[in-house]
Length: 249
Ligand SMILES: Nc1ncnc2c1ncn2[C@@H]1O[C@H](COP(=O)(O)OP(=O)(O)OP(=O)(O)O)[C@@H](O)[C@H]1O
Image (cartoon, rainbow, N blue to C red; front, side):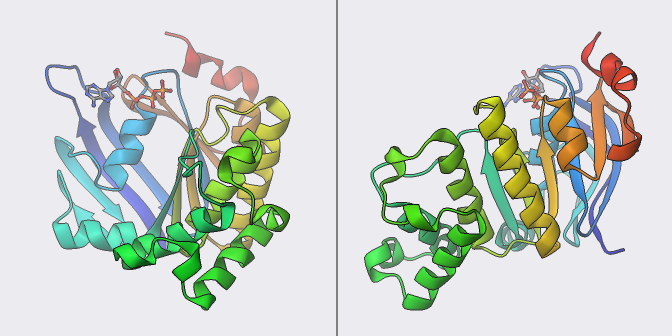
């Protein structure tokens, strides 16, 4: 299986702090869906940031999408990584006063850059079609012309997923994608998200505090504790009583 992510002895501390990541070794293969769990402050977001070169680390090595680096990727590596990674965050980050379609188009145009491109009205026809297709995949075609601030939280998060998908990423990084949603909307978003990445063969790494989401929507669960990998198991082998320790000191 093609390796999408590899870390070796990855260590990271912030200024004047104790190590947040203290020797992380993980491997993620193409098409795998990984749930990253751990208590508040366990280092989940920090690990995601190290993987994509968003924050420098102290020692060890990271290889993401074939780009191998220590501390930080080079500018060229960072550019190549960003081209192939889609992001979804807890707060959808949509432009509230713009239409749903414009928000999705921006995900695509962000790649090419250029000021003139940042509006649906002047986006080339094929990009608008791609955006409509991405909206269909998250089952929101009917909302294409609505303003983003008219959507429910769950709908907005599905638009954020469409905006990431239109970039045709090889890897999707999602930091607590369902954390600000109610339980029903949260499951709904995770179901759509997880199904889509599986169908498209996209690798997914998402963080969550919800064990049901971890075991239902991932193939593998990785738990961080004390700066180290505490559990790394197929989701089908994760037992609730076994993970309790992850969240306790
Ligand atoms: N930019 C920063 N500067 C200094 N310390 C930081 C910074 N970002 C994170 N930290 C610290 O690093 C530790 C790990 O934080 P991180 O956000 O990676 O954890 P997390 O597992 O994602 O937590 P949560 O579940 O609460 O989101 C915490 O103690 C946090 O305070």
